[in-house]
Image 1 (cartoon, rainbow, N blue to C red):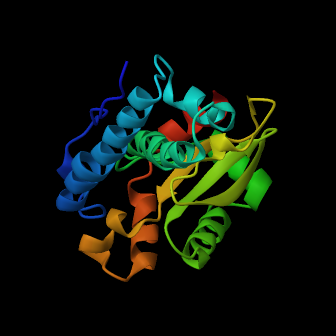
Image 2 (spheres, rainbow, N blue to C red):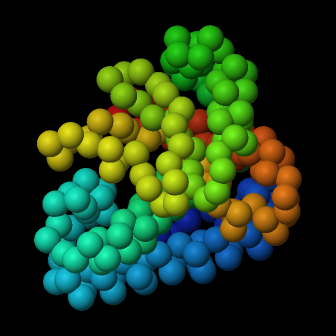
Length: 205
């Protein structure tokens, strides 16, 4: 089994004007595809077969492969997992229901305060990486990860500690064609295309 580029549930243009068509197309068919190609090559070279992407990330540290190969796999398999997650939480014109609003109220006082904290942490992040809202012991926390690291990689005894329910790509390739150096506008635009129905599903999962 080799990993394949996931098909999107929407057209590249469906997130306009917040996420532009050209960026979505390049992001999906070029950047994500490249992570998949590299991951498949590493797995084939090391004779690793029939493993789901999240299971691979969970067991990454225990794989008996050279350190250099493990680092490459971390970056590329992480890129595949992160982007696969990202595409699924994008959809225009959804709103958080009362369940989500109450969850955010319990953890961040209210929705607007959550957005403010999320944006502040995203803007203060230096370099390439991701920002996440994770569920840990039924509590919510905003964290960042560098490069293509993933909250799933933070584990104990091969068991998940963190469950991502929101993730935003902070790499420049995700926004530079439209927003150039105005990263704050990209982050604010995210709220218009965040699929709150998916967020609820992931929280209750």
